[in-house]
Length: 98
Image (cartoon, rainbow, N blue to C red):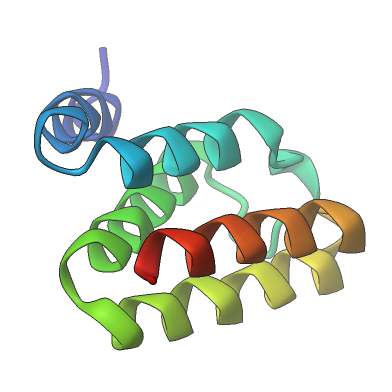
């Protein structure tokens, strides 16, 4: 297993204990994203970046939400997420942050 994969695996396990809603949302994004269409071409680096976004969402409040939403827009621009998928992820993140 690559170090990046282990970082994400362990990080998500810990996040599930401390911030289960954010962990579930982050895991869902990891499963939904079309990795071949993302501006970041290395799938392992992309997974680490998405995990980092989820971590920020769970620990940085509004700042984390802003980063999360900005990347969702980028994924739509890249074609890695549909507008509907991004809107759903955005809504769920906003619900968590309330």
